[in-house]
Length: 396
Ligand code: CTP
Image 1 (tube, rainbow, N blue to C red):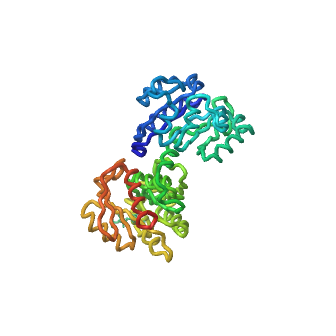
Image 2: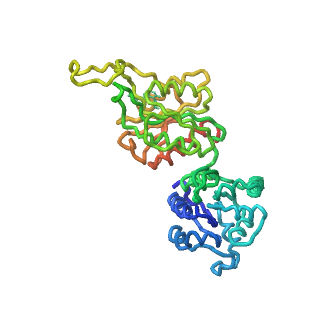
Image 3: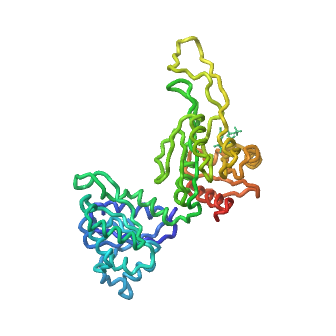
């Protein structure tokens, strides 16, 4: 519920991407937003108001003279109640109208009468986007403080390829979440490790663990949403790269160590979430091991470097945060780890509470003691951990 209680007016204008706005209503609603849809006349030629009414659970506003508004001032009422007006798709014509302050339909009137921010997701044919008239309007809107998200490049409904495609609904959702998140890590460089490592035995086999990477990826998203510049050094996982995050894919603990040490010098905050293998195979084979070659192979192990401890002991170390996944005695083990690795903050959890799942139960340990967080989805916990880091580093 990343948008709980946020009131969003979603304006839909005439373009084929209007069908994607239907999915956007569902995604915004799923995150707790209260969505009121307003359509231009043009939009109704692509998708019906019934679709949006069914998905938002509210009547859709279509024209200025809607008799349902008690004081016949729908434009004022609707835009005054909103925390954000989001227009997706925003057609070339609509952008031209609002860039010039026209109020010739309900949506344009609401935009002109608004007291809240305005975000546009343009969608049009690439030639229309490149046209100097559109570009003039884009510049005017940007100057007026309107947030423009996209357009993306790619294949268009008309068969052409170029800039003009509306961002995907999931990408627009990320932009909206970012818009509302307090920028407690604004301008900070945050380095995060996530996922398992894979220690090769031979070219096809290895030692790994069941870390899903979800907590580290949730933290990368949360840090990005709160204004940080995020680098995510990730072991092998099957998760999409969070929007705006720079991912450095690695496999082994040694590769992870190298990637982290290269970036650590510039980082303000380092969060070690990865489940790094404590040992690697000393005698890894260059060729695939064959079963009938000389009996059961012996695997020799050698210790991996401790990435978190190495970063924490750098002369100008970033603010370091570790994770402790334990099966028992959480507080004692977590506090011991905090002291041993010389890090100011450890997020501890019992593996039976969160490993691999979407939800987690974590407790933060710092020099003030234990701060248990209410069990929640990993993203919600990630945002709370970011808040705690911001507080300890003096950003809050
Ligand atoms: N960590 C790391 N590099 C390693 C091992 C651990 O950066 N080689 C980080 C993890 O990302 C995590 C914390 O250190 O933030 C966990 O440390 P630790 O508990 O030592 O890892 P475990 O192997 O789980 O330790 P133990 O077996 O003692 O419980």
